[in-house]
Image (tube, rainbow, N blue to C red):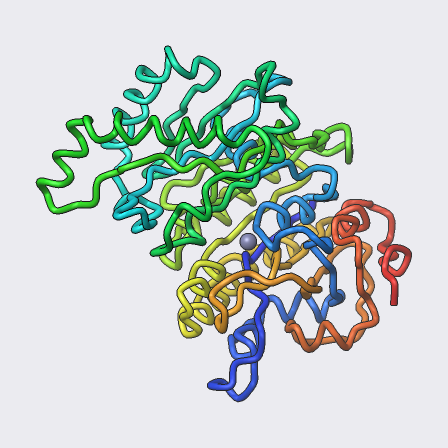
Length: 414
Ligand SMILES: [Zn+2]
C-alpha cells in the first residue's frame, strides 16, 4: 500500500459575510478534493489539543501521528533538526530573530527582512563576542532574520528553568514597547543579559552601517524565543514500520520530517506562497513513492494568504492546491489502486482575524479499503454533517496507515 498525505496549511476558515456566509473552501472550485470525498469519506478531527497553541508545529505534529502534548517541546528544536543541529541532553535551542528595536519599541521583527548574506557575518560576530562572557551559547545562522541559539544549562540555570522561561514571539509585539515582553521566569535574567549584549555587538557591525547607508533597517538586537529541548518523536520506521518522504517549503515541517526519520525532498522553486512550484512538488512526491511507502506534501499558501487577510488569494491557493496537487494524486490512484489519499488542514487560519484558530477541521480520505460514505463535497459544513469526529487528532493517521479495511468508527467518537 502507498499513502499520500496532502496538507493544505490553514485551509479551514470561518464563513465570510462578503461571500454570502460561505468559507473559502465553499467558494473555491475543488473538484479533485470533492472526488476524494465522493470516493471515500469526510469527517472532522482535532489537530490542536486543548490548551496548546494553534500553530503549524502542533498541527503538523498531530497530522504526522504524534501526540503534541508529548512530542511538542518548542518550535526552535524542530528548526534545529531541519538544520542538522543535534541538541545534547543538557541543551535548549532558542529561535534567535535579528530584530529592529527603535525607541524601546519592536519596530520590525525581521530587521527589514535582512538578507541572508548580511545576516551571516552578524551571527559570526555574535559568536566571537560571546565566547568570553557567555561560553554556554552558540549561534547558528539560518535564512534572513531567522537564526538559532543553542544554550547549555549551567549549575545556576537548570535545563528545566531554561525550558520554562516565558518568551514572547516578536511577531506578536510589532510597534509595542518591548520592556513588558522580555523573557520572564526563573533564569530569564541570564537570557535577557544575552539579548542585551547583542545590542553593542550589532551596533559596531559594518553590515549594519551599510544597511543604514542604503536606507534599510539595521538589526539592532537579537530576540530569543520558541525554545525547547530535542523533540520526542519516534521514527516512522519503528512507530509505523514505514519509510516516507516530506515535501514542504517550510523549515518547521521539514524539521518534523527530519525528527521522524523521513527523507526531506527539497524542491527548487518551493516558495511557501501562491507562486510555488506545484508541479515540481507533486512530481517529487509521486517519485518518492517509488522508493517509499508514504509521502507528505505540505502546501503553505492557504495559510500565508489568510495571514494577509486576502480571501481572494486564499481561494486561489485552494483552487491551485486542488487542481495542481490533489488532481495529479487522484490520477496516480487511478493507475495504482493500492493507494490511499488523505487531504486535510493543520488548523484554521481565518481571514477575519488573520491568524490561526483551533477547533475540529475537515479531513477527506479515499483509496484502497476505504468505503464510500455518501458525501460529495469538501467543506467545514459538510464535515460537520458527517458523524465522524476524531478528538485525539493524532490518531487519524494510525487508522489511515493501517492497511486493513478502514474502520474509522473505531477511533471516532460520534
Ligand atoms: Zn499551519
